[in-house]
Image (cartoon, rainbow, N blue to C red; front, side, top):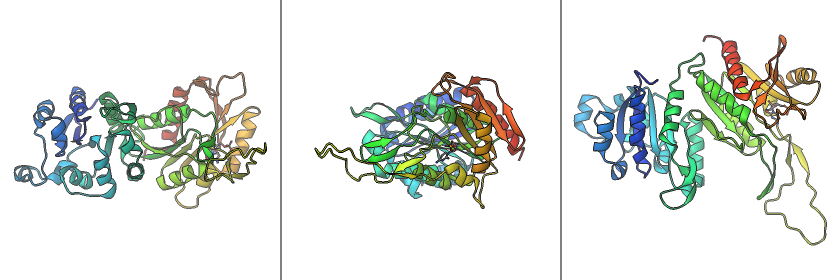
Length: 400
Ligand code: C5P
């Protein structure tokens, strides 16, 4: 699957560096070639001899290695690859990338490359959740850097939580996706997914039952057609797909900001179940019972309609804007009205009335409403709906 492709693999300094050795084996097993680069710290965790033996190529380590400089030139190194992969991507490497620093070979290559970059973060759970790392992650997402993982689990340091590097097989899947050749190759497509959480106070929130399954399947299907997907997701129960740029948000207003930051895009698909209202009088501190027996009164304010806002943009509107409509009766009439009201190009409508088993289930029966009228699709799996919809989007965007 990777025949003829060259991966510039930057190995950062972390205990997960040993998994990079397995990743090299997997890439080569698929016919790909690996140019290995190790940071100084990486060589403390896994030997350059192991890495070069598996890659079948010399390891590059120093910025000022005159032998290599004379042979290829390090800028050249970063351009000769089809994809740059950073695994493990340490907190330090992510910070350097986000800031645009170039003070060693790895960071210089990352700043000099004109190719897509995929990172597989790996770090202690507290380092991962630190606001600085999350800020850097958001910046990297905005810069178009792809991310796979991290996963939750036990860590070498004895703690438990998010921060374990994605498994080599998952990273391989993300690499294959990033290099996929298809009708949407190189096209930027935006997908929103999942529910939103609207805070009542710092510990309580209002949410809905969206799992994010349909949006996730759609992002994966668009990725498989070669699209560069930005996936803006609320706190969903299903994990985001590999090989897409994931932007995590909580509230509707954060989702709108993330969507606007991710534009321009050629197509935008709004599969998120966005809360219509937020709590206007959310408390800055945890609300306490005051012993009076009185319950607090929540006041609500309307959230921005992200789909309508993007559909009605005068400048920078995606060529194709697709909304969803979950209805319980008169699906076609309501969805047609919704299309007109929101100003989007297509509405993907589904009947979520009780008894259909669609809400929270694995199947969906949708009707596509566009300028030409309604098109009914037979009931099928949500993955199949996603693939058929992705193909319809590719056809609508045309060959170039
Ligand atoms: O109005 P309704 O919630 O039924 O519209 C559903 C469609 O609008 C979905 O595509 C959903 O993602 C989008 N939407 C939005 N922002 C909102 C509400 C809905 O993008 N605040």
